[in-house]
Length: 124
Image (cartoon, rainbow, N blue to C red):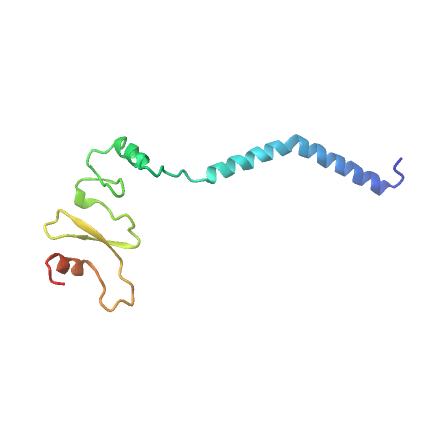
């Protein structure tokens, strides 16, 4: 028999906690399991089938850019893959373009669209 009131309270708390855990523990496990599953990104297959499926099922009335899957009016309107770190340079003739890395602040001769145009004309 338990003689101390403190021991009785502690025993009741331990028993209550185990009952609550038994009742609700599974709910919390399921909740956190779902959250972990939602956080895992869907990784495309390495064989390119994801890209092909997406490309084939894409609803676009214009041109689908191969690099970004953007839907544009003409191929030259396609955006660069990494717009925050690349510059899009339209080549002479206006039908093609290249994306180049943005120049660093300390480059002695920054490579920009003027450089690309000179290179295209063989002047570099």
